[in-house]
Image (tube, rainbow, N blue to C red):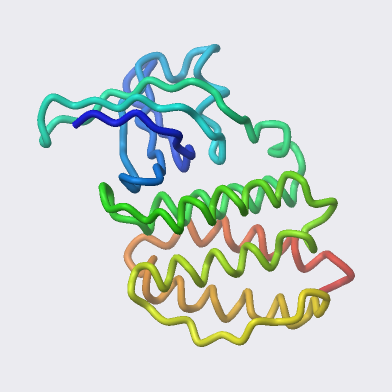
Amino acid sequence: MEISAPAIVCAARPHGETAVIARLLTHDHGVVAGYVAGGRGRHLRPLLIPGTLVAAEIRARSSSQLPFARIELIESRGPWLSEPLPAAGITWATALTATALPEHQPFPALFDALAALLDAICVAPSARGWAMPLLSYEVLILRELGYGAPVPRPERDDWPVILTTFDRLGAYLERYLLADRRSGVMAARAMLRERLARIEGG
């Protein structure tokens, strides 16, 4: 396997003393896990923040081998992780992606939608500007994985209905995509829900 493509960092966990195993979402190859040597070091650690867009070179000698990945920064999401609401949105969207999607199956629509959602989170003046794209991404990920989500689309300015829709979608995600691995991932969504509810006492 040899892949050279832009990728969105969706998760990274330590491996050994200095390395990281990163889960990267690519446009044409879906989620790919890669061993990043020195990923916990000063130079690479900021590149492995969830939501960051990187140029990835991923290589493996055989299908049974964990690929090695080399990454270079394209666009960082680091500055927004110090803000509670954007941080919660980025953390949830990338954790859902890393957990729910099978490896090596292309989902180009999800790559484009996640990239657009992350852009919206980072440029919108408030969560009101990206709450609807987030709901749309959740619906899309359910549909791409073969599950319907019969949830009416709320009006953009109807915040109570947006939160109700958020709760209904959460039940679908928990039931269909995260039934066996939901604890940590759904905790990220619960934190996001708590912070969204503070907007105008929603």
